[in-house]
Image 1: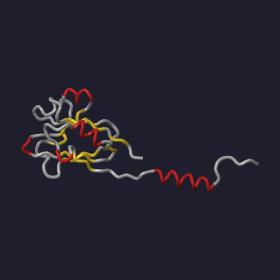
Image 2: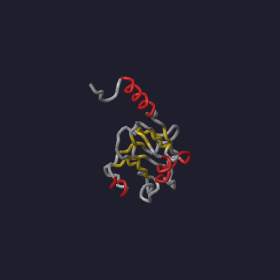
Image 3: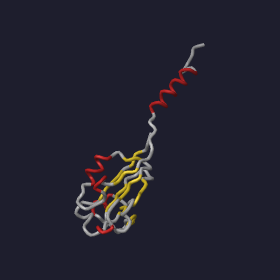
Image 4: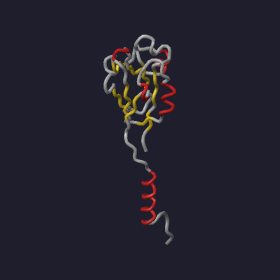
Length: 138
């Protein structure tokens, strides 16, 4: 009778190799803008490109001085993001919530997240908005 497939030793070896290839990673906390924080005049598109990848369950921290009157909104879609349309946006953090440890947001879904400051011209001139796509961890 011919043998087909792997024997028990080969199966164990295959499982050991597969397990060693998996990297165990933990969720991380990322300060938006690094030491630049969440502020007017910072290039968040470039920052995100240099900081990526972001992963599912990572925490974004938006830090800003209470005197600067910034906020954090989550915009519902790309159109709203591009046009800085806050009519259906959700306020996540008002101007008083960025001080101290900052406002924390967990990337808890696998989708595009669109963030922007809704104060004055913060978003409209393209300065204070950020889109993030968290990836699953393997």
